[in-house]
Length: 620
Image (tube, rainbow, N blue to C red):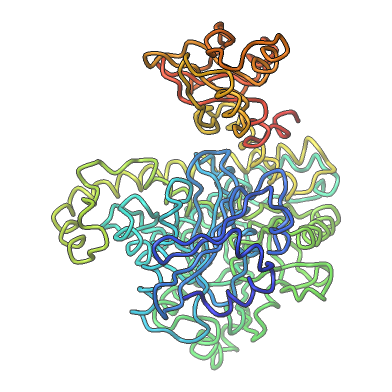
């Protein structure tokens, strides 16, 4: 049954006619799909299409019984490759616009990570009440059936409200390669346990520190003093999965920087000479939150012996302290803003003195209002205060890099679940137990590859960020970060094989009559038919051929072999877009068949390229 809050939103947003025309039912599952060209309907859903996407927006739910299971899927962009990769969020108040914003973040993050995957995201509209673990698992299991329809273009991982165990549930239903960030017993990469995202933040801090002297070429940084790593001070907002791992990894470096401030929901701790991170990590393991417990057990009765360490029960006041580097790692929409009306953690006029911000939290949004507010903040922070900002999707991509290895390094065929055990958890568990050694070895290889790629990509991102900022003093850090991702997308697009964008080409025999061919072309969007004899392409018939024949008074029962174009320009499916554009222009044609080993594989045209590729970006 469709979740009540989801139905209420969709009924209000979409007219009844859209429900009648777009709703499709398949075995008790219901789907409404919208493409980028559905501008009006997407606007009604709160989504504004642009030159990048979205490629697909799907609203879907399970109608088979009274259990409320439903949600949204957004495949934003596939220019980097197929499928799109992004997590499943599970919250009661999800809307399509939220999923689109997250999907756009994944488009940029996957591109910045130089991964051969597009950007996507999905969301389960959870019940607005407490649910048991069993009900949670059943909802995820049913949602697996909904997204199973889109396996060719969407690959899920965990996000807020879901975890590695949920990815295992999806894999049990849809196959071992149908989800990412699975447990190690499925060959997964233990992303949260290993601190994959946090590791990227740490690499970014170290790499950006090395790049900082180059920024002295810009007027706002000319007086900046760049410390060595041992003297660098760092504030970490949020001591959860990312923040705590960042602190642990930084304190384990040699030499280690000083982590002078941390915050959690109960307050913040600050000591300019550095906090005892090992002790704080033990408190977190035992009690969850750290700041108030540390105050009660270490500071309350020892203020005279330890006067340097400060505790305050206002977590956001951490942002008033000074440090060389600030790491936002708390789940807040805005950690800084020039306007207090948006309820940021801190307004720019009250922030401490910093030199760089490395974003461990997801902060990016393509929403025009939020992006405009972000740029206003950056003008004040970057231009006026001399603080460089490394945007989230450039630095916290360690998780997606690790997860992607589960698809890049393919699961051997003999380790994939037999079709007959899909959906049978007990049978799958037995299968995994029998193959545990091989799957553990596969997980280790994937981990090693992820560690290597994370190091290379994020260090390159920090160098390119500084390159862009120095080359164009008017550019803001967010704009530079977006440009890094867009450059990767357009570069990948240039060499994308046309098999990814070609469309089917209708084949006819040489004996088909002129009238019959004309009837087929009326409904064919590609305005071309392949003439095939004995399985081989012998010619093509186009709208122009038909029109020319009619103008010459040819009889309508004439076989197409008499009017077809015999000298056909073709292209192989592994040709890239520049190859195709060059051929179309050189031969002054608008379409041509795609042929592989003599067989017609499809058709490519200037019209298809305009619809399915980033031609506008390529021209830039």
